[in-house]
Length: 85
Image 1 (tube, helix red, strand yellow):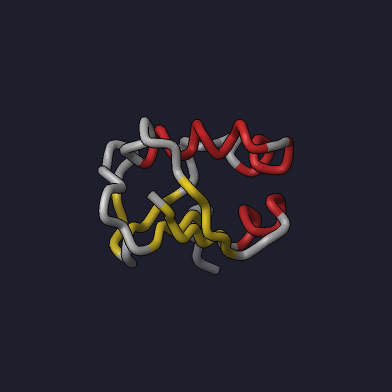
Image 2: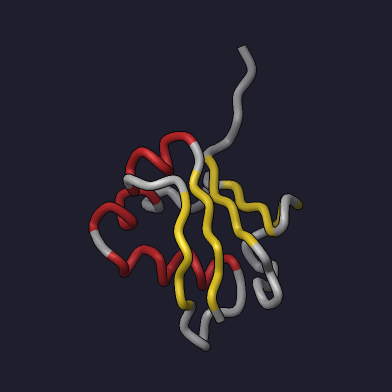
């Protein structure tokens, strides 16, 4: 499966790109597995997802939990928590 991944704020800064198309391994079926796989793609991904517990994810612009299935997703976005000010 090919997936469109979007990265926002400091996730984007640490990875060095705002979006990419990736060929996902067949054994990656949910958000948590996707993050684990992304961390293996290089030190920039490892650094960006080192605190995966605070990164928020949206599938097709809907917020989801780490156990959300990614099959049939058109886009998956990752962003840090938003704070007010």
